[in-house]
Amino acid sequence: MDFLRKMWRFLMAVQLLPALESGEETLVGGQAVLEGVMMRSPHAWAIAVRTPSGAVSTHSEPIDRPSDQHKWMAWPIVRGVVTLGHAMSLGFRALKYSANVALGETPINDQGKKLEISGWLAAVNIIFSVAFFIFMYKFLPLLAATELKKVNPLFGEQIIFNLVDGIIRIALFLLFIWGVSLMKDIHRVYEYHGAEHKTVYAFESGDTLQTGAVQKYSTYHPRCGTSFLMTVMIISILFYTVVPVTTFWARFGIRIALLPVIAGVSYEIIRYAAKHRGSLFAVMTAPGLWLQRITTQPPDDRQVECAITALDRAMELEKERGGELVIA
Image (cartoon, rainbow, N blue to C red; front, side):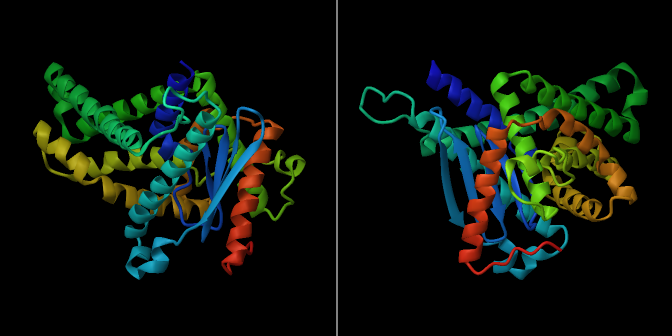
C-alpha cells in the first residue's frame, strides 16, 4: 500500500508539473518535487530531497541551454516552445529522482530489489498525463460549449462560443488545482513550491542564502509555471476566436495544432511582464499570481533548507563550468 500511495503522489505531481516549474531561461529557477526542490542555473541543475529518515539526498548535473547550441532557438516565440519543452523534460527527471528517493527506503520486493520507477512506468505516466491534459482542457470544454450551443443559438456565435469554452477550461483547471491541494501529500508539494520561490527571490535580491533570511521573502513569483498556464488559457481564447472554423472536430484539431504557438506567445508575455510590472501585460498575468495562493504555501525551515541546498549545489557546478552568476 505504501508503494501505491507513493506512485499516486508521483502521478499527481506529474499532472501538476507545468504549474510547479519555472519554464524560462533565466539566471536561476526551480521546481517543487516530492519532498524536495530542484534548482537550475544557466549551465547546471541540482536537486535536494528529504528522505523518509530525515536526511537530505542531493544530485547535480551539468546542462546546456538549447539557445546556446542553436541560435535559432533563441528567436522570439520559438524560444518559448523550446525552453518549455526543455524545462518539462528536466522537471520530469527531477520528479522521477525524488520519487525514487522516497521508494529507496521502501522495503525491497520479493526479488530482492529496491522498488523504483522504471523506464516503462515513467513512459506510461507521460502518456497518461498528455492524454489527461488533452481530454480535460481541450475536449471536455469544447464538448460542453458545443452542447450549450444546442440549447441556445446565441452560444453558437464565434466570440461567445470561444469565451464560454475558455471559461469552462479555466474553471476545470481551477477545480483540479484546488481539489488536489486538499490532499496532504500535494499540499506538501505546494509548500516546497513556496520554498523554491522564496529562495529564488532571496538570490535575486542578493541576500544571504540562509533559512532565516530566505523565509522573509514572498512565495509568489511572476515567472511561476502557474502564471504561465493561466496566461496560456487566457490567450487561447483570443486565438481560437480569430480562427474561422465551426465544426466540432475542426475546432478540436485547431486547439491541438495551435498549442505551440500559444505557448510561445504566452512565454513572451510572461517574460515581458516580469520585467515591466506596471505594463498592461503585467495585468494579464495577475490571475496567475492570485492562483499562487493555492499552488504555493508557506514552507517550514526544513523545506527551505532543501531549496537552499539545491541552489547551492547548482551554483557550485555552475562555477566549475566557468559560469558567473551575477545579479543585474
